[in-house]
Image (tube, rainbow, N blue to C red; front, top):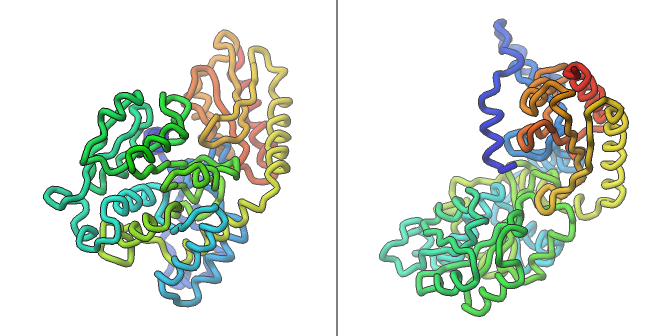
Length: 404
């Protein structure tokens, strides 16, 4: 599922509830937020997330350690640059990079990284981005056609033109005096002809920086340092997915000079990233989320996901016409999920209809219902303790109800 495509599914859906007609008295506004159910007040549908860490589904639920970092850091002032310096040092050490910075999501990391490649430490150039004509800055970025899925648009916000190739020969022919960078989308690595190592080798051969987008590509946890050690000059990642940091945070890491250059275009300065603000609470929460994620018992967590899959699988496998399969995506969202397929001669429901039955049932459950005909896919990694039992019960109910 493309990060942008899921918006098409959710934005057309009506809210399950409506805003209460009775206005709250002014005195009620003083009630402690912890005691208020704001979703209920606003008439918003909440749901059990058996789909995954999608932006349109608000990413992830932040753990207690991350929320504690947000709450504690909100009570004092600090200089933003000094905070980025210190946190950047810690993140770089954890991820085995020369330098790092917290950004306003992965998209922001891509835009700022691109700007840093163009400007270096020249502050005059920083003020000229994205209007590159006549500045002497390079203006083109090369990527593989199979890697162009919309996320590359983050690069064009810095003013560059995208040059799309398929083969090594095409790439080498495309390189010229205007070429600024080679960009790689990790989630599409299996589809492109040019793989990671060759991409880096070409960058070094032609003295061009390489950047990789690994937005949703942990686990495995080793990916946090794998691409730095492999030799990519810049690595961009989302913070609000499996790491369960703030959804509006991300990380740009890599070579010291390029990260320093990227920061010149970032808030609180007046460059292209001035509006891409990430506040002190998010910066510290991102650091805590990263540290927590690295120190998790990942084998234990994986086993827990498998146990939840087994519970759901066992509850439905006796239904006539049903088949199940454990599916682990190869790159992004690399976690075990349960693919549930059915014979349309036995189960009278499309995948879309099944998704809507679960969405608008009680309780509301989101599953992956947009990938394949006559099937849904169920993810475990966003489920809260015990929710797998509810998911199992509801899926069984809808399958049985749709049985012929």
